[in-house]
Structure formats: structure tokens, C-alpha cells
Length: 341
Image 1 (cartoon, one colour):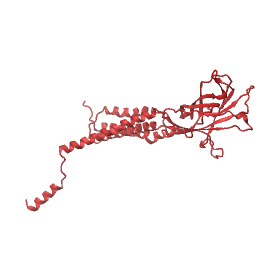
Image 2 (cartoon, one colour):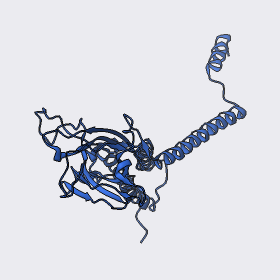
Image 3 (spheres, helix red, strand yellow):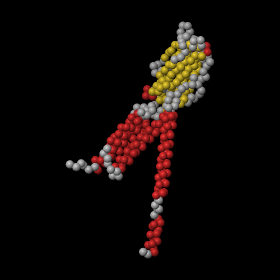
Image 4 (cartoon, rainbow, N blue to C red):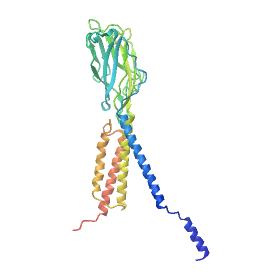
């Protein structure tokens, strides 16, 4: 070997990367394992926090509730149920008289009142409370709301009124103003409304699990020419999904996508003869294809199949699983030898 050949051999050897020692390999693997473990711990803690947040009711009140009047009628409203598919919600109403409207000796109404609730699913409801009626009891009201459940989990709903000057279709007009909720009249001996203003107050509203609510109250006094309308409590209410529900849905959708990716990796490995074909794996693919359907329908408050999350994620995950199963079965038919006679 000449000196030139020796120099070329030395250059080629120096150009080759140095092989990692077993100690370096163990160190790299240890750091990788630590990173994966830390990521899993973070996901676990995030899921616990999301579950805890989803179990709490969140009430975001805009302006403060109307101070409870010392002499008048105070109302408390709690959102107790949501039915987005039917565009309605259920409010639980508590009526509490105070001052001259309360007979403190026996805890009853001192004056006869008429409550008129509008915008109910059953139409206008009138409830007369004669003097001497014991205070207490709750009334459930089914109210119309506006919203689109197909935008789940980013859907939000409103109770309110459209601008009176809006030239749009009344069905599509935005509900940006407060709407009448309940009107109060004082009744005379002949059970007819008296031209008397009844002071109205409200208690802080409670929250419904899994939802974030924004309540905005106001009171409109009756016009002098129409005292029978009564003083009216107005409400603008905005309801949207709580942060815990959003986080939970995102985690479930991410798991669906990861499952489809894993199925694709398995199918590709079998198709390229990198792994042996196990016929029992066909059952695994089929189980995944149908197991995700109840997982999707049982997400908190999920609408019927056909929402935007189905078009964006779920249908594509199902399609990917179906293709992966088809690739696996095709590989099995192609590469597995026929049985011996």
C-alpha cells in the first residue's frame, strides 16, 4: 500500500461517525423514558383538572343582579336543564315577598299578586297568588333559547330579544336585547290589576354543571296608559359550554386520531411484510371501527351524529380505520399461504 492509499484510508476512517457507546445509548433512552413519563403525567393531571372543572357550575354575571328590594317582590332564577336539540332551557323560579308584601306573622303573601311569564314554550302563563298564600315552593319554566347545537362543543345559546328595527328574518335575527321574563301586578279585591308599581329585585343566579352562564337583569316599569302590563323583569342570558367540557372533548378527539394513526401503522407494517400476519388482528380492527361510535355519542352533552366535529374529525377517523382494516385483510389474502389439503 502506497503512502497515498494510506492517507486516503485514514481520511475515510475519520469521516465515518463515531459509534455511540453503550453508556451513551442508555443515557439517551433514559432521557426519552423520562420525557415520555413526564408527558403522561401532564396529560393525567390535565384530565383530572378538566374533570373537576366540568363538575363545577360557572356563573359569569355581567352587571350585578338587581339589589333585593326591602319592600317588594324578589325573584331567584336557576338554570336547571338544557335541551339544545329542542332549543329550550328550564329555569327554576323562586318568589320571595318582602316588606309590606309579606305577612311575617305566618309567612304568607300580604297582598294579592299576578305573575305573567312570557316566552314560555307553552305560551304566556299567568299565575295569581292570592293574599294569604304561604311563601315557598319552586316553579319550573320552560323557555325558548336561540343557538345551533351542530357547532358542539363551541355552541352557545341566548335568551333575549331581537332589535325591533331589524329588517332581517325574525328567525335569524340576533338576540342582543333583554327580553321580558316575568311581569308583576298587584290585584285589587275584584282580582283586576291595580295601577301600582311593585318593586322588583333579584337574587344571584346559580349555575348548571358543565355550562358557563352570563345573566343580565333589568326592570322596565309599566307605561301609564297600560297599567295592566305591570312592572316587568327583563333578562338577557348567554349560555355556553364550560372549559372542562371543552377540554374533555378535545382529549377524546385526540385519542380518536391517535387510535386511527396506530391502526394505520399496523396495517402498513403488515402490507410491507415488516410484521407477520395474525388473522386474529382483523377482530381488533373491526372492534375499533365500532367502539368509537358509543364513545362519540356519550361525550358530555353531545348532539346527534352530524355535528361539525363529526365532519371535521369523527367521520375521517372512522374512514381511516376502515381503510386500515381493508389493507390488513388484503395483505392477509395476498400473503398467507392456502391451507394444506
